[in-house]
Length: 187
Image (cartoon, rainbow, N blue to C red):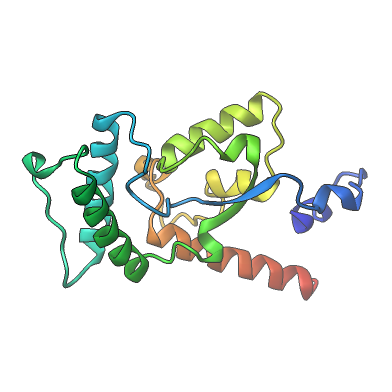
C-alpha cells in the first residue's frame, strides 16, 4: 500500500496513521478450509466441497479424494470432521495457502462474513463494498482485480477472473516481491 500511494502522481499524502492496522484481519484469498463448522446451506456447502475436490484432485499426482453425492452426510459430525481433516491435510501439501501471495488485510467489517467463500464471491463483495465507501486497501483491490496477471497473447480467458488457485498465489507472490524490489532499488 505504501508503494502504491508513493507511486501515484497525486500531491496528496496520507499520514502514517493510515498505514497502521486498525481492526483488520488477515484474509486468505484461497480459503483455509473447505468445510465450515456452521453449515447453514447444505447445497452451497456441497458445491464448495466439490470445488475444493476438483482443485486438489487436479494438483495431486498421487492421492485423490473421491466423494459420491450419496456419501455426503452433513449431519454426521464424524463424517464432516473426517473429510475436513483429509482435505485440509492435502491442501496444505499442495497449495501455499499461508503464503504472501494468498494473504491480504481487510477491515473486520469487510472480512468477517466471508467464511469459506471462494474467490468470485469475495471479489464481487469487495468490489461492492468499495463502491459503498468501505476502505479497501489498494493492494487488496489490485489482488482481487488480478493486476499481477500478464497477458500471454491476444486471447482473453474470461474464467480467470472467477477463480483463484495455486498459479494465482505464486504469480501474486512473485509480483509483490518484484514490486518491493523495484521500489527499494528505485528502478
